[in-house]
Structures are given as C-alpha cells and as structure tokens.
Image 1 (cartoon, protein in one colour):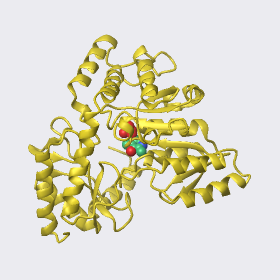
Image 2 (tube, protein in one colour; image 1 turned 120 degrees about the vertical axis):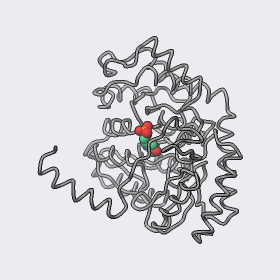
Image 3 (spheres, protein in one colour; image 1 turned 180 degrees about the vertical axis):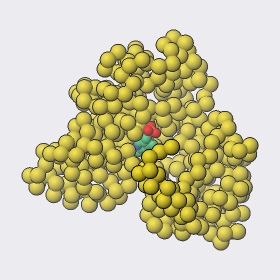
Length: 396
Ligand SMILES: *Cc1c(COP(=O)(O)O)cnc(C)c1O
C-alpha cells in the first residue's frame, strides 16, 4: 500500500490516461520475438520488432551465449572499472572498433545508457548542443543531463543547422558546440545527411555525434550510416546499439582512442553500473562476425523492405519518405490510426500505431518493421490484410 500522497498523485493520473485511451496495455509474448509471435494464444505476423536480421534467435548467437555462460558465469560481478571487465568485454570492444572502422570503442549496458553517459562525459553547462528536433528520447535525456544549452534544429534542415551553428559558435557564450542527430530516424526511416553535417561541422568546429541505433546492421553493409557515406573518420561519436540488428542488448561508442580513453574514466554508467553479462558480450561478438561474413542477411532485410513498401504504395497508402526498411504507413487522424492498428491485430498482423506526441499531430501512422526473417508469403498476407482494412476504413 503506497502512501496517501502518492495515491493522490497516481490515481487521477492513471484514470485520466485510461479514460483518454492513452494508457498503454503491454502485450506479453509467449515465446521468442521472431517473424511471427504468439500473444494470448494467438499467432501474429510480427511487424514491430527491431530484430532486423533475426539475430535474437540465431542459433550461433545462442550457442555463443551458452558457452560464455559456462565459462564466465551469468554475471560480470562488478562494474567495468572495478573488476567487471572480462577479456570477452575487451574482445567485444575490439570487434566493434574494427567493424566500425574506428580506432577504439566502448560498450555500455544499453543504447539508452550509452547516451546518458557519453554526452555528459564531454559536454557541460559551459557548452551548447545543437539537436535535431526528432532525436530519440535517450539523446534528449542525455543532453539534459549534461547541463549544456540545448538548441533545437529543424528536422534534417541543413540551412537551419548552419545558421544556428554560426550563431552558437560566434556568440562567445559557449566553450564547445556539438551537433547530435540520429543516423536513421526511427519514426520515418529517413537518413541523416552525413556529408552536409561533416561540411558544416568543419566550417564551424562542431563536435559531431551520430546515434546510429537503427542504422547499425542495416546501412553501410552493417557498419552503419557514417560508413555508408565513407566518412568514418569525420564523425567524432558513432553511437550504436547492440539491442536492435545485433539482436542482443547493449550500446557502444566508436571513435578515436583518446575519446574512448576519456569515456572509460568519465561516462557514469560505465563507472557505476555492472557490465554487460558475459553471454551478451559473446553473442554480440558472434553477431558482428556473422554480419561481416554473411552480407546476404542484410540484403534480405532490404529486399523485404522494398517488397513491403512497393506493395503498400501500389495500393495507394502513403508510406512517407523512408530510405531504409522502416516502413511507416501514414494514416493521419489519431483515432483512425488506432482503429487501423486494432483491425490489423484482429486480422493477425502485429504492427503498432504511433501517434502524437511521438510524431506530429495529424501524422498518425502504423510503423512496419520488416526483418530478414519474413518470407514473401508473410509479406503477401500482410499486404492483403492492409488492403482489406484500408478499404474497410476508407483509407484507400
Ligand atoms: C533504440 C534507440 C536507443 C536505445 O537503445 P537500447 O539499446 O534499446 O537502449 C538509443 N538511440 C536511438 C536512436 C534508438 O533508436
């Protein structure tokens, strides 16, 4: 039983959310997160995971995790800086750096954690951060934690970036100015304009920070968006997650040796939160190996992305401007979007609706995440169900 003060706060808040239909009921999976999933005894075609390459259930990753558990145990036993660094963590960081074409890398327990630690290790209240307005929540929180002045930049608007970079760097108010953006924006699937960002950063002396959570394992033959543009040595911080395409859990920064040395003594989640489990580290190493050696998995992901996009677009759906396998289907009205998603669910397709405030008002959408595991037959079923629901609800 919580205190009366807490109850008085929680009860009306929860009631209001439920009344407005904004209370998110969580569906638990009865089994693994693959191309099909089971919820409450019913099977669905799954279009909501970030398990882009199917690595979450890849047998070779499972084996690596089991073997590492046998050798090292289930937990690392301490934070990295006391004695929770095992040789398998070092090996993982070397593998990441090699894969990302950087001098060094540091692994964190999650991508979220990584943004909490990395930004505030370098930026402080004497500094300013130029931040794309659609950046991920963990970037926003990481920026806030640093205490730096946060200057919002219009989404992917390079003129706005140039103008604000000029203003911030010539004002004399800040010691350092950083620009932060997602490499691939998760709601629209559009790709950061890395060449232009590099140009502007060089012009104004900006520190650059690209969070490539949705680009790693997807863009640049797996090595990410920065590599895709051949600019690996021009971006200071390359952030990635080990939780999406890599299929496990964790996050990392890849960059210069000096940057990584600094983060290892200053990034607070690295210093004060227990390291990745040995099983996770081992599975991630295996994932990176497979990504480098078997490009066909990434090719299949892109093929499926193109197939789904083409199918939905031919039916007359608005699929936005995605440049990656992320396939938004923009419905518009919030209520209609929710209804659409609920009808897909009834028909056996699990695809989440995303509405305001996650995306701008009036741009409610269903976000479809095809993976390398989906078969053509599954995608054909999805397209047929979209057609049925789309006509029924007057969207097409
Ligand atoms: C998903 C995501 C994260 C969080 O990564 P986790 O490893 O799941 O904590 C961070 N940044 C961006 C841009 C993301 O899309």
